[in-house]
Image (cartoon, rainbow, N blue to C red; front, top):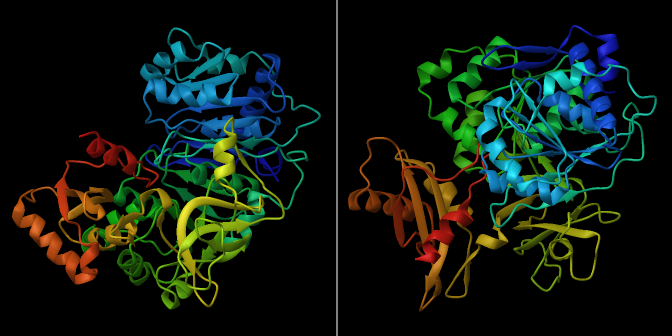
Length: 512
């Protein structure tokens, strides 16, 4: 199914509800507007396989751009709205996008981007225009809402977050089917398999829509004919308020959101009726085990987790009950066969820590315009074994555990130290809001453990606080994992998606 079908059968049903404003987009409106945009883009010369770039905040019209691409065989490139002009323009030029759509809210940066994208001919702006852009609303009004006879299924070409280097465009071959045809890779089928969702579900998306999980899962909800509720910006109490207001049945969060919800007072938590919530799923970043345990105690065994990447090379999933039996795991595979290998590609025995690969019948993605990065993602001898660069191990029951990213593993005195373990321990200290742990050069041991901490307001960034944190760490961790140095910052560069720009912080220290 797709919005065209739901626009006919349930035209007045809410396809999208905005969290703070309450703005509603019906399925009839989503269908009509996406048809108009698809037709307008075709009239401008865009065709199957072309790229559309969208640079926008969480906006009620975000999905009509997505579905215009998905119903016309084009790729949608969602651009991180927090990037500066040159960074954001890189995604447009790298993808060879032929259309650039933005909003008046993003006008300052969007206009600055124009100098970097001379080869992108179609430029539209919603909610008002500035020089260099045509009116999005006028463009849609200039054409008809008649659907094309053939509507080939499009796809997303999303970019990695760039936390360990420049963002990489992740490209898959276009599906060989029409938008109204089902298929083994249907997002809606995956939703049903994992979460038991149906057309009566109400799904809360608190993350930025440029993020892969947010846009892909939300469009999957539209395939089901269910309702997506989108928070303009995450706020812990607002999340609870919207769950009660819209009788949310399913939600997807990242670990930092759970930590911030747990930090709410008991009075605030008890203020809202969360009984409609059937399932909350989390992913995107390592979850501190104590935070997960507290969430299960608070909301019950409705907390599920999955591990996957935008690349789609594989996927694991686990329930609350499975996590309690295998604490720290990210689940068993539901897509792809996992293999743990050393740096030479030799597969390790159960419990051995190494690079996590997933085996598929054939390689299913490439990094756009970067054959070397594509090659680095493949096993040295097996092209259909693919990795995201994560380090982990499998237990005897087949559950996968992640230890860290390969790029951030600290090697000190010949011993591998995984920053994620240290971060998961220290984030639960009541004085800590956020933390980044990484290795820095050491003349004797090769690297030492360095931590940068964002403190709660009112906590002094002094030696006494450092010693409290180190004492707390020693209670949780082996001595060699305790940070040798702890620095403080007012804020860490963490995206709303939960991803931390750790490489940026580490590079600053290395530059010194």
